[in-house]
Image (cartoon, rainbow, N blue to C red; front, top):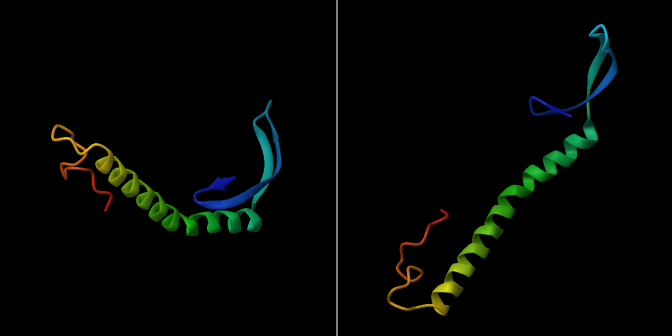
Length: 80
């Protein structure tokens, strides 16, 4: 479970009839490391995505350079 941006594990019990219980939250080191690696990889993933989008837009411009086409007008969306 992620609680306020921190990976934790709930350990305890809850009586659903009385809405009573006891427990604690413990830091989940393993899931925190997995999450940290995922966050660290995001900038590289965004750069690869941006490169792919630019490549596809250039390919479309070369494929359809007709005067009525919006693809070669220079008004394409910029990602940066």
